Amino acid sequence: MLGNSINYAERVEESRQVEKIKKVLITQASEFLPSYYAVCYYGKSSSGRLLKPEEYRKRWDRNEVIKTHKFISNRVRKCFGDIPLFWFSNRHDDYEDIEGNCKKGSFHSDLYIGEIPNEAITAPSNALLELLGKSEQSGIPINIKEVAMRALKLFYWNCVSEKRSG
Image 1 (cartoon, rainbow, N blue to C red):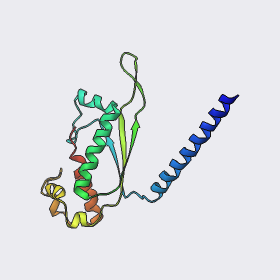
Image 2 (cartoon, one colour):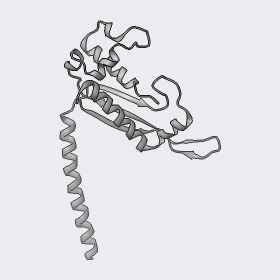
Image 3 (cartoon, rainbow, N blue to C red):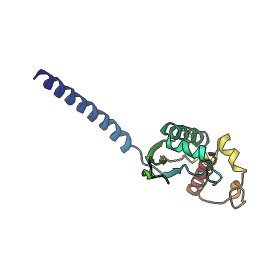
Image 4 (cartoon, helix red, strand yellow):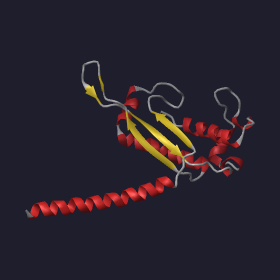
């Protein structure tokens, strides 16, 4: 009977700890209102081409996905400053290969991004300045577009996120 009491006490203590963690997470989440949202699909390179099979296979490895998150987060922060970024990894559905074997699905990631400060655009960092002279797909240099601040933030965000090579 003593074993049951100890197990029960451990479960109660674990439940209390989980509740404490939930409260901290809820407090942090309630203070964060995302301004931007991105989905990272790992099947293509930044140039839009399909990845080579050996590169695409890495998208089944959670550690490789986390490395990609870190790379993108570092790049974003170099360009825009210390803005909040929240990553969520999602696994695609399992599937059957041509031989009938069940295979795990690859990952994609959701990224919630906090507000980009206006100063990041009006006084761009060296990392962002590097992108300003580059041309987008239409061939128009980024720095000659006349658009509102929010549109510039979205545009620069796209440039930064596309910089990640496969």
